[in-house]
Image (cartoon, helix red, strand yellow):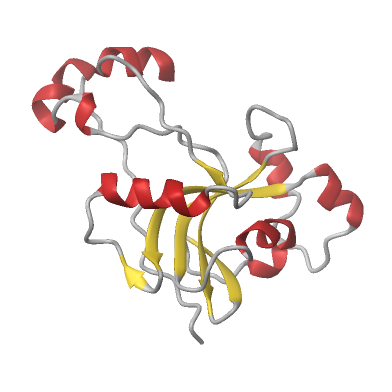
Length: 175
């Protein structure tokens, strides 16, 4: 139906010495840096009054994450978010280990206890479609600004940007 995702674009590690980053990819001020979470990469598609969740293998996984669908249902039609599904308990400052998320995968039924013990939230990285318009050709800074505005007050988590003065400082944060 109208719930098809866009092709996934996955990140790859830059296997190079940190002191070559400026030369190879430019200054860190030209980049948005986010944490790489250990969850399930997903797209949330809201069209025609319905919400679909797709895994990066383009498998429909909506039924396994009814708790994440609650917040996503508040999005207007014609919205597609790229993000991550994570077990992230209310009030926690970071997601739970992936092992807890694994307990929810490939289950036919999700009991109340499992839903309570492993609450899943969608953390958005990018806005791929807004008001039915494909934004993928727009610059990242424009999509990020639109994403921030779109998620304001929605209850959907936005992946925070990590700040550092230079690439070596980012490397230290990562370590």
